[in-house]
Amino acid sequence: MGAYRREPLSGLSYLEEGAADAPLVLLLHGFPDVAQSWRPVMHRLAESGLRAVAPVMPGYDPSPAPPSYDIDTLTELLFAFAHALQPSPALWVGHDWGGAITHNAAGRSLPAAAVTLSVPHPLTFLEYMARHPAQLRRSAYMGLFQLPVLPERAIRSGLVRELWRRWSPALHMSESAMAHVEATLGESLPGPLEYYRAMFRPLGPFLSRAKELEPTDVPMLYLHGAGDGCIPPEASAGQERWYRGPFASRVIAGGHFLPNESAPVVAEAILDWAAQTPTSGS
Image 1: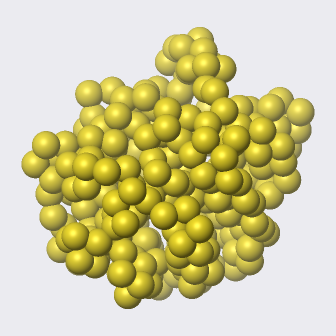
Image 2: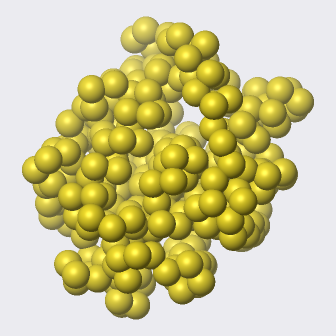
């Protein structure tokens, strides 16, 4: 699946393509996913003269667990990782949990520009969930993950495969690729679940942090799959109010796992956005 490198300050393992002195694009994976899902996108970015780096997210094997799984700690850790690779601000691209962290980083003006996939701005998503009971049902797995023991058993007993099927029903992964995702998630436990547990334990600080988010000038491109079985495209409506700088939103073909399912479109969208909003590292 490709050799990992390790960044010594953060301890994070990562995949890399492109010249070391090229402008940095940070590619953050989500749940239940792995850094290798970015490989097709990385190839295209590197061919176009960018340095594409996909870290194994904190708590996913072989990266170490973070000091805490709250979103601010995760954001700071990934910023330190990016800064160690390129001192000037980078282009951040995040899918699913990587997208939530990228939204948070943009709210703190850490990236030079950003692209998020499949998960809207957290306040927009919370507002949508409050108004649409169907989303509560789609997100019921978050409640399951608060329980002891049972979620770990579910992850090791087919839940990962089921979520991929449900969230990207038109995607047909090779058995070897799916086996790698399942094995990585199983070996990483409880890390991938701790992202969700930190949201609700306790819930008050999570909501307080979300409410403290301010509109940002960081340029933001948002991509959502038309056939997303986890979060429908309409859940992102209105999130532009959190972005005072350049903002664009596109619904593209695919389900939830866009880096894997719609890599050519995603890669070209990133390249177009990078050209419109050049980073200070370029």
